[in-house]
Image (cartoon, rainbow, N blue to C red):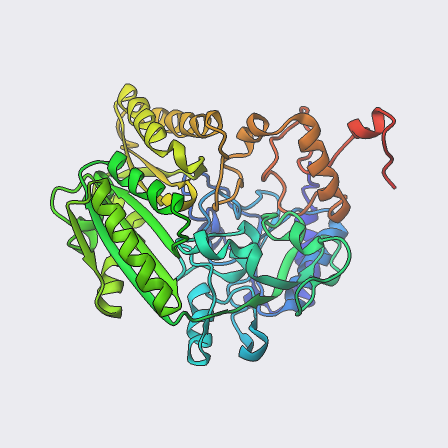
Amino acid sequence: MVDSGSVTRVLQRLRSQLPEAALVTDRTRLRTYECDGLLHYRVVPALVVLARSADDVRTTVAACAAEGVPFVARGSGTGLSGGALPHADGVLIVTSQLRQIHEVAPHDQRAVVDPGVINLQVSQAARPHGYYFAPDPSSQQICSVGGNVAENSGGAHCLKYGFTSNHVLSVDLVTPQGDSVTLGTRAPDAPGYDLLGAVVGSEGTLGVATSVTVRLVRSPESVQTLLAGFRTTDDAGSAVSAVIGAGIVPAAIEMMDALAIEAAEAAVACNYPDEAGAVLVVELDGPAEEVEHEFAAVERMCREAGAFEQRVAADDDERAAIWRGRKSAFAAVGRISPDYIVQDGVIPRTALPEVLREMTRLADERGLRVANVFHAGDGNLHPLVLFDESAPGQGERAEELSGAILDLCLAHGGSITGEHGVGADKAKHMPKMFSDDDLDTMQLVRCAFDPDGIANPGKIYPTPRLCGERPGKHTGPHPVQAAGLGEVF
């Protein structure tokens, strides 16, 4: 339990070091921050700090550490797993005002940015130099780089270029004790333990990033984008398997089913092929000659798999029009359903047809609908479970279906998350994927950074392990110790 007066003491400390405008204590304003992009979970924080600098972050974390008060970092608040869900007895540190791009160094293929810088702004700053920032979540127009680092975000083009972890060279981190450290270097392949690798994707449980050095990728010589319409998702899935099986690695292969297409049409009139049961958006990039050769093969494979209509973007405007439907799909689902849950799971690519059919059966059993829009090339599913919260029982059935979909992913050798993180939403599913020993080992790593368990508690790990146990802090001997196989120093 957090001492009831500890947050008050943190506030008193901060009032002597930060301007009053940086401290949010009014109940109405605090409710502005009660959730992130996952609206089902809401917790009003005890105090919000609007940080304007790395020093503000460090000052706030140090005050929390001194009083044993939990803290949670939040960027733009677009996360979809409740990773930035506040703690009721804790401090929410908002980094969205840290939005300066300090350096774009094209010859070193890197940029140094604040954690609150918007993802897309990095590419916009690098583009005049012939470079861009490859990770591109669907929310890239509003999500922050710090949030991308916390969640190891992905995006459509991560099939070829990898997730955020492949594009971070170093991070300036405020540890849970309030110290500032730099993990990684501005050059690749730093010696020693990969502590940077531990931090990227740790969902704010190991500290707060205050500066990020990202890797920039050379803009490709040629880009070709194809929109292919299929009668069924099975046909579209066959085309995906054919392309990948041929050894072609597109920059992106995205699939949308009929419901997702309907939603996108209602929202942005994307003019996708009429009566399509599924569409694929396939994008190839690289040297012009290679792209031309492989693109012709992709068109042929889509046709052979049953594509009844194919469109090739003639220019950047037409490419943007093709992507507009896909990029808007999540938000667009609100046009066809009053409520929905965005799920995130991964399966082996070859299991796509079977999993999609089984998902439909599970939804039919519960009288619900599921719209699918996902990264087909790497098996990263984003089923959107549609429901009406005002209808008795639908919300509960939607939650149940959402969990059943994750069970389905695991049954096919997949994962409970691909790019949205575990957060508060999926912590209860972690034991389905990891043994107690696995989870204890992860906790040991966490405790090395945060022995008092104050950095974003209640996320990733199922809690409480025991009644009243504070989340995030390992107690008792590790199984490896108990077995006499190792010691913790």
